[in-house]
Length: 496
Figure 1 (cartoon, helix red, strand yellow):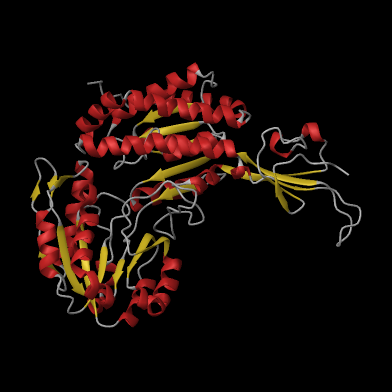
Figure 2 (cartoon, helix red, strand yellow):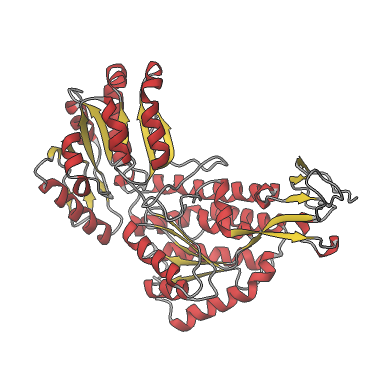
């Protein structure tokens, strides 16, 4: 077992920041093909070292080899997906409006717009995904793909694994000839805070709790020159089930709900925290049986365990709460079973602040409603969330559209007859949502569009061709898709 790394000293943090700042111009000018090659080399190395990395990860997190193997594969597939995305080049959003003497609205100059990297990016690794949202995770991948140096603030929950992954990235980057400072890590909360406040950091990505994310977001905004802070924080992820769905497949829904709640011991940011069922649903026995059949799982660390205990204690003390099943807690090993609570929609409305709280762990609240017409209003009162789910039958689509319309204002992803746990890495995915789900609802932390967080647009007017960035030059040597005078094409531009 590798030794746990020491906390970074102020001098070490300064060295990492200085190296990143010096490397930024060279990293930004690296070709798309070379950026992709570096990401693929890291993916290949992680796959090659999978057995040893999983052993270290399991010793630190107790998540189990099967779960960790699956997550490692997701991580390397994600690196390759981002590599393919960056080579394809559409993220550059290259637009060319050539000069015209007499267009419909009068003469116009040659104007060309594309995006440029923001500069060094600070990534705060997450606790619950030691591979996929950590040192070589999605934030790191897209920031590097965008042409930004990356500094990862390692999470305290898996420092040994983080050191191993950081070392292999450094080795692969050195072998590929990447500039010193292209990638670095810092250890410790004070090191992360110091880096966030440093003017050499130009953007921040964070995955974690609302409390910690908001504190860091406020620091980023309070800097003399505020910087983008992309925080993915969580939410209640409510699930709404119609009477028709209960009648058609209620027992299946109940069992799958419990499975979604307890996946990873409930420590997913997309865990459903609320389940709305019609009064008289008759599913209590199924819910209890499913919950009691789930093997208790470990909490990630003592801090998460303490927060879970505290939130759950507040919920169970509330006069309106009925306990359906109380999962046993073995504090010595941080092992927790499923905890299902129940209340009515009227009590939720009356005590919204007390009952609509995220409980990060294998606990969820079942809310009984009387009429589906109550659902749109209660949905609007819940606040921003990452996901919202509807279970309904085909002949109920028109009836639930008022709820769908409310949910699209509430959530970053709306799920139909499925479950929110598990976030596919695709071009169309949006993993974010209105606050407190995230600090920037316009952006996603997962999928192809995640790269947009770390670039900004620049327009170039009347520039000679050789002085333009490569994506905007006439020849299009990178063969990227561009919008030229309103038409998408990969062809070169012919100037008039």
